[in-house]
Amino acid sequence: MPVINTVFDRTTVKQLVFLFTSAFATAALKQLRSVIVPNTVLKSLLSPRSEAVVAATAGVVATNAEKITARFYPRMFAEHPELLRLFNQGNQANGEQSRALASSVVAYAVQLIDPDAPSFDHVMKRIAHKHLSLGIRPDQYTIVGHHLLAAVGEVLGDAVTPEIATAWDEVYWLFATQLIAEEARLYQQAGVDPARPLRPYRVVRRIEETHDVVSLVLEPADGDVLPDISPGQYVSVFVDLPDGSRQPRQYTVSSTALGTRLQITISRLKGTNGAPDGQVSSFLHDQAAIGDLLDVSAPAGDFVVGSSNGPLLLASAGAGITTVLPIVELIARTQPQRKVIVAHADRTSQDHALRDTVLAVGRQIDDFTAYTWYETLDDTDQHSKKGFMNLSELPLGDDVQVFTCGPLPFMRHVRSSLLERGVPASRIRYEVFGPDLWEV
Ligand SMILES: Cc1cc2nc3c(=O)[nH]c(=O)nc-3n(C[C@H](O)[C@H](O)[C@H](O)COP(=O)(O)OP(=O)(O)OC[C@H]3O[C@@H](n4cnc5c(N)ncnc54)[C@H](O)[C@@H]3O)c2cc1C
Ligand code: HEM
Image 1 (cartoon, rainbow, N blue to C red):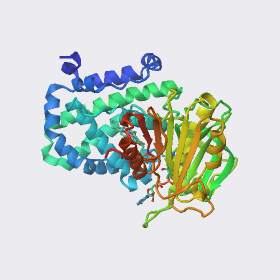
Image 2: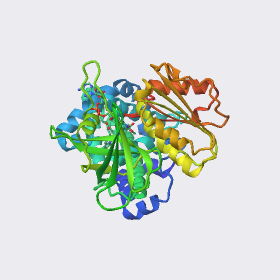
Image 3: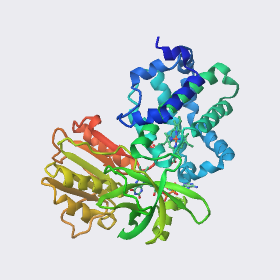
Image 4: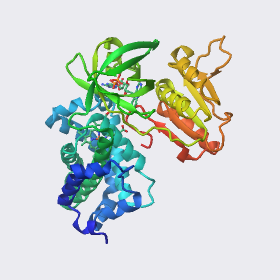
């Protein structure tokens, strides 16, 4: 039995957290590509006593997971109102963050008791990158753990024996330790101190791309250089709203080809069926003016293209186009011989932001093809198709790598049509513009 099974307790976890976050360890972490523990090792980390308890109670926790996380957030915010400024209150109102947290904890527990469970690495990476962009610190895990486990007790009541509480505490801290370690590595790599995760950027240009989409070109206002940005990554932008609240949102860096500047492109979110308009997107559309300062995080996210030579399909819809331009720029700059197909779906050609820029940069790529689908097609448009994206006849190539970004139903459609065409799931990457509910 691995030693860690016999000694794993809160003290060990605290020691591990200290180890991962000490200056010595973080310097070493910088060299590593990932510190996420693989499935096979993960199972051996849970103590045998807790494994049996988690196996016996995972079902009931899963059934009540959303009830638990729905209780968790209000009780945590009541005691720590300062955290309201870190959490997207739109995702609180529509329940998406609650569902994302619930499903991640359940999926993690399943990993611990079932070695054949599908790999969880991509979820861990996504959470760690999101946390990096928000400046989440190791000490905050104690607050989250306390309120999450208290919420389990509130929802399940007397059914939670001390043995069950201990087992789930262990699950939480295993999850937390791994995230803290991966985040320590990401902070080191980005050269970011989690105590000061944001930098001021000045708005130096506004480009009205379409009626509902604006690009903001931003320049660091602290006189320092731009951070390294991998095309496809996003930043968190924190804004002070007129009602006095402060809120972060993530925006993809829509161009990394502007030298000392970066660009973000924001689609205005209109409320439907009685829901309010989007807070931050409306604020940036209506208020962000040249000369204004915005607090911006380090770039984060692993929706990035590797350097293989295989053909690329970039399939986007609506605001998802913001991930396409930086990737096309990257290929034009570094691998112009690589085959690239861009496929985009939108409501109309007037709503299709960044189209001309993508086409202009695409002309620098030897084998570049663009396809468009619009729900409403202009009579004069000879090049686009009407209706939903149809990938069945595109000349993809056997080893195509797919990057897709857009609303979830769109990406599900893309994925299933490509799986039908024999593209392996492992070659299809996606980016969700909200909490990742893909697997919920
Ligand atoms: C990795 C990533 C990259 C992204 N990149 C981009 C990008 O490049 N460009 C871009 O435009 N966006 C991008 N986004 C999305 C962006 O972060 C914001 O989510 C988007 O701008 C909407 O924010 P908002 O504040 O305007 O809307 P919010 O105010 O957060 O509202 C979000 C939704 O919640 C609903 N809602 C809010 N309050 C309530 C309520 N009380 N009851 C019911 N419903 C409610 C709203 O109606 C709306 O539908 C990205 C997101 C992620 C995670
Ligand atoms: C083991 C502990 C934790 C787990 C399992 C967890 C899980 C998650 C998940 C699944 C997401 C959504 C990621 C996505 O966008 O797809 C998320 C986002 C987030 N997490 Fe955590 N988290 C943990 C700890 C923390 C801590 C300690 C904090 C600090 C207070 C924190 C703050 C946030 C914030 C602010 C977001 C963004 C929420 C939003 O935009 O709506 N998390 N986390």
